[in-house]
Amino acid sequence: MTDKPITRESILKDYPRMKPDERFVFECRPGVSCFTCCCQDVSIVLTPYDVLRLTRVLNMDSSDFLEKHTITGVTSEPNFPVVLLKMEGEAKRCPFVGEQGCSVYGDRPWACRMYPLGAAEPENPNPTDHAFHFLLKEDLCKGHGEGRTWTVREWIANQGVEEYDMMGASFKSLMLHPGWSKSEGIPAGKLDMVYMACYDLDRFRRFVFETKFMEYFEVDEALAEAIAMDDEELLDFAMQWLRFSLFGDRTMKVRKSVIEARRKAAESAAPSAPSAP
Ligand code: SF4
Ligand code: SF4
Image (cartoon, rainbow, N blue to C red):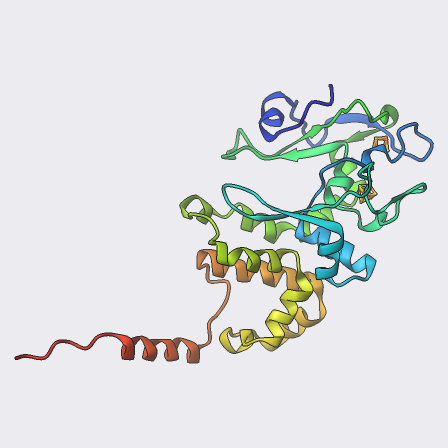
């Protein structure tokens, strides 16, 4: 396979779909002639959990990490904020690659773990046309046909992808929400809110605990404690809040006092009935 641009359409049309027990032969190790070549001039989309793991291992505030190491964009249909790892210098190298390889290896992003496998999902999945894996065979990568034989399942387990998939489940379910098909997209005024909840978790935590958020929503004590202490819990909570905010799902509970105050305000704002002459 040549290094033609890989698009979603080309994957769905041209790439052989691999089953979990299908085998491939691959080895990536220091000493291979292409070692770290794949860590430059490459587009790596970061999931919310990727950002969480990288900010934590680098001991950075999420806003600082995003500013220093990412580029932000917005997808179309739906319009959704995405962040890409920012490559550096003329060679467009990943900021985390060194002579020894990846300096954040234990916390490397999902896409780096999966390589040379990819994962794709058809537009309208059904029992005969569903999510699948495929093998990327790019000219620059000399790891193919070398070393160990893997099944798709073994590679995913060996690279620690399952944990990333599990932690990314609530984000995935937001992205696949049936409400997108009826929605006109995220209003411009809400794009930053979505960006914050997905990627800028330290800012989201301040938003929850340092604004009137808790006066508006009923959050039980145990959950409040968990989201204050635990990044993974906070990320999941952020996804539940987005489902409420974007689609009106009953994933958050508005306080009765807020509902009552709103009802009264609506009543007093309603025009009174015209009086009889
Ligand atoms: S995060 Fe690590 S594996 Fe991924 S591109 Fe950067 S150096 Fe390579
Ligand atoms: S190009 Fe392939 S073999 Fe070379 S370092 Fe990257 S993944 Fe490993």
